[in-house]
Image 1 (spheres, rainbow, N blue to C red):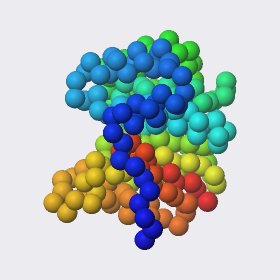
Image 2: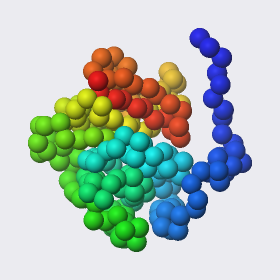
Image 3: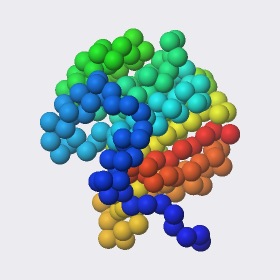
Image 4: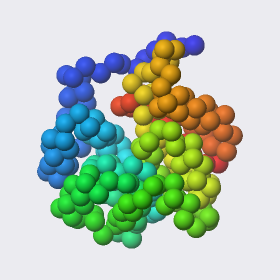
Length: 219
């Protein structure tokens, strides 16, 4: 095994990293503040650098049809939508009218609401109702952990070669390697990580971005 080269991020180093990313954005900043006001649940929002990465990946891959599982207050969806071409579409799957109301207002302010379809229903039902054709170019999974494998399988079945699945929280605060952590969410993340690592239909890599981000590209 090679030496560990990844840095642990202090608050100061993270601030430096964000400052040297994309310029501050008034709509994203407003959305982040409103989400922060929700209290501890705000931790579910993706980090600024992760949002910037999502925008970049949509542009790099040329994705036109994107799916997001778990929208919360809409930060990641806004970032995904900004990477889409004018005729691109983003399908957002969530179950909360309250949280996604915050999302809707900021999508309007950012001028991307016309690209986004929000479906309030269990995501697995929304996915299974989609045509079983290779029409999804990119997907971002960031929802209930116990359903990760199911979401992944339904999405992959609707992707052609080159489709990219991005999955958040795969390091789960470090608990994936804590033998004392045996709760349902931790076990689900371990099960998902093992599933992807053994999946020969994709090329995959797990990166220590924020709480861990897996990239899985369909062969």
